[in-house]
Length: 373
Ligand code: PLP
Image (tube, rainbow, N blue to C red; front, side, top):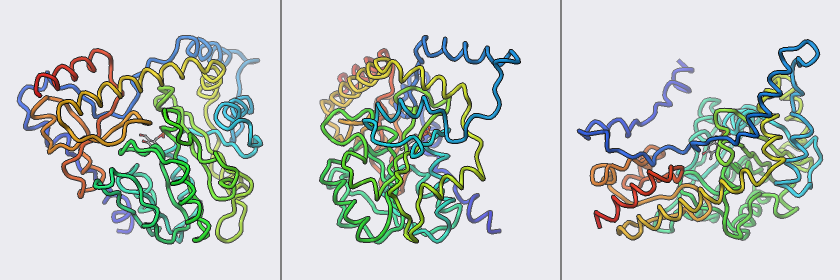
């Protein structure tokens, strides 16, 4: 019974299927609904993967369990590229995805932790808490304020799941907004779990990491992932930074607690995924160019929606933006987007547009929008 309530009730609103049923000719549909980078991954990274894989076919080259906290070479590259080398390697953990890491932390924090997050947001912040039956305090973003978070609305929390740039709103926080949430964390004695899944896409001067200021080191941890900007969602590779200064509300060092938790429950990420990550980070131009191209496509897409008369939010620092539409994007233009009501029923009339789109589909979408205006 308890399992049924906690887990089986997490049913998804399948609005896609419902809308698709109404469309007679599906061959014309272009999807801007999926938030997954179509790739491909650079050939040099795959060559390094193959070399590494071949070692496993020899007795001398075969390796067993990887270190559970990850390979130092990968940690060093992450530290240099994303954090200007400000962390020690013990504070960085390599993992198999932000989604699994979020649930690891939720499990670690336990069923008494008061968790808060912005809605609409990545569903695991809420659903993971629901599974372990910990109390949640959603803070709803207001379309009238352009889906910008209002930090004055925050209520006492032990843990705040923060995502900048946010999925699905595509909005990134500036330094002032980050500082406001740091003040709240200090006031409430809580910590911030920053999901930096889309941070490398930031194009403006907004912070790409919550650790842009040293003060954050006692208040926050950060989760990063190769899934989106490196097209590694099928490879599974991510990291978590847990600064040694962070203390949970009972005074425990989070770094000590997380290390013990991983020792007990985890055996590390595949050598092969990690070698691919190392190969990619050794040549940052491979992903920096892709990020630039993706964000150029997003800007073109956004412009086309604006010129077709739609109200648009976000998309400056993230491959997603929101469009105000009453499901008519599909019926009018045969463009499939992700209805925001699949995140929360109160956001009916808005859709998330994903800029992970091929050049060909981008041109087709622009033409359709131009012809309709
Ligand atoms: N966090 C956010 C905000 C996401 O949008 C997603 C995937 O869509 C994830 C985390 C999942 O990341 P990963 O592939 O590293 O598990």
